Length: 131
Image 1 (cartoon, rainbow, N blue to C red):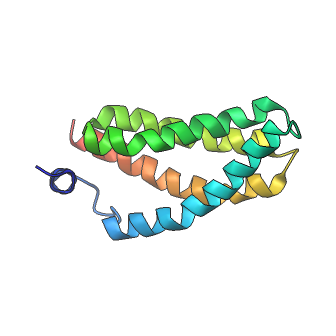
Image 2: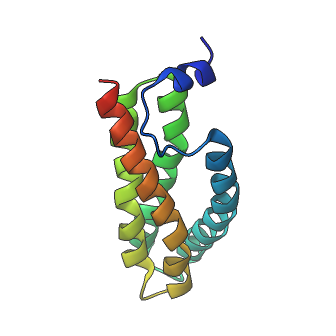
């Protein structure tokens, strides 16, 4: 069974966005993430900000990149739920860490945090329904 057939076979809430919508939202968010996270990493490498400011951004990026392989290759809903919780928790942590240095970076995370909040509720609902 393909990953799409597997995903389609899962019990999901009635408000689950269409896969095309999910893809479109990520196409908008990834450039924001790329620019803002890249800026933070660059500033940390240049020692313009303390290195610890970049830690929540690095954890978030790793967890974000791990989500799709966990969800669609491993097809492990509980592990994907844990992973997305890490993504969700690290966004406000990153916003707080960078706030006094570059507020625009913190503000740039707002759409990302809103979307990941929706995705987290969706993932937790799917995990519970398909347990």
